[in-house]
Length: 113
Image 1 (spheres, rainbow, N blue to C red):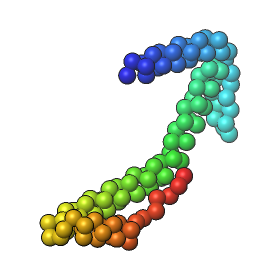
Image 2: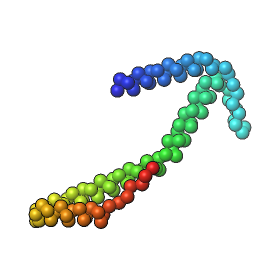
Image 3: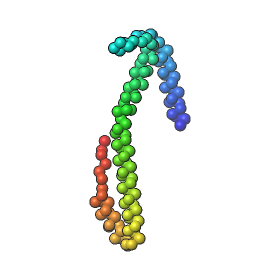
Image 4: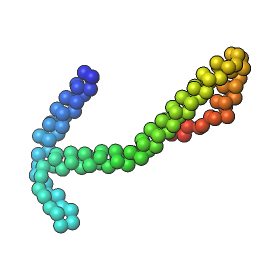
């Protein structure tokens, strides 16, 4: 927590130094839209928009991974419950063999990325 705070303070100081050194006013034109602002502000806005777009592009893959992890946890829970039910009715050796066979038959491959 303290390390994150120190890093945030350092980044903030660097951003202020950057803004002070790049205070030159520039004109930005896009189609019929024009505005005048400091170079630092324009660059920081462009950086923020780039970060926002990259986050939006990565959202679908994050959601897919969360769903996959959730389904795998559910399957693990089902197998554990099945193993507990069987352990009450069979001996330890028979249960171990049956559980191993069930796990092998129900294995799902995780995508490697």
